Image (cartoon, rainbow, N blue to C red; front, side, top):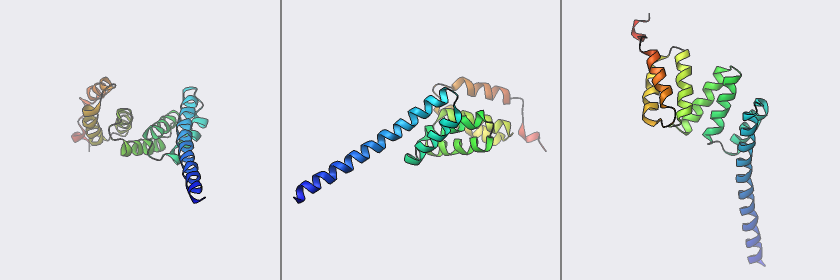
Length: 145
């Protein structure tokens, strides 16, 4: 009798773990579909829900940052990018978005630091970094007062 109880308990625990991991993946996929269809409120809700179940999902934070970029809420965009980069420091898309924010804020030291990191990890978006470096060549932050 005790043996059957242990087997049943282990089976239930296994099924619960499997269903939670399935739900996490399902939330992200649904959120991504909403994002692609420009239904940002629904996408934000599901990305945030995915983060509740999987707080180390850098992609959910990245897409939340993209949503806040569309909504022009730079503070929330930057917070989500920082979190994504804490979890996944080599995320080239998050690095690139953070570089663009730093350029807007005229934070050239941060641009330089992020750009160096980006140069080391870029695979797909390397041309973007070259464009940013070209546009910053004529700017010398040392001349600012």
